Image (cartoon, rainbow, N blue to C red):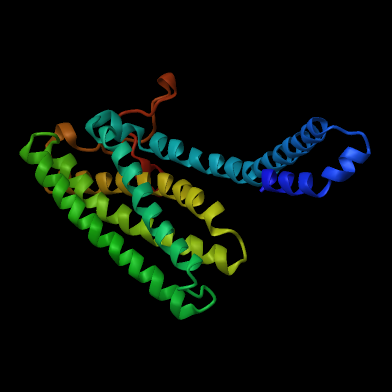
Length: 259
């Protein structure tokens, strides 16, 4: 557009430029300088429109670090759980991105009216169901291939296989809801939905994963289904202050709830 405008201005003012004694080369250079100025201002405007959102999302992503710190004792007892943290985060982001892209495409094609409650409920429920079913299929595939090829232990494989459908279901729900809310509020869904979805899913997906692991090992230990080496420690009242780390008896949920 900039250089198209430059050509139009050159054709309109060619005679005027000659009569004023300004050579065609000088006139072209002035137009190029004006075009560079317009391009620079557009970059600054883009930075201003994006920087605030990115800063907000960066603060939100710190939540993932707090989740990992909260369950640090569990990772110390079973390091294999940490191997699949990138898998959980990546899968949640991928599933949510598919839902966001599908909804934004439908909005751009005027196939959806976000102001209608029936449309809102239909789209969100559909995407949530799709995410859950895809997660079940991928969880079964992960457990089968992982055990067959000896890529994961049985207990950690079960935890990941159970977590995948839950994370996928939650990611699709968030990924379908955010663009519709943005469109209903008059905001740009493409600018905010995908980064906000990633920010939410990174932290909440890890929380789902670690809660599944805690529930599985706690239940397995209570029913003697999990060996002591992979079980979670019981609460013995307090934490070790050595090095600022939790003691072996710390329990993230029991410390907060008293159970």
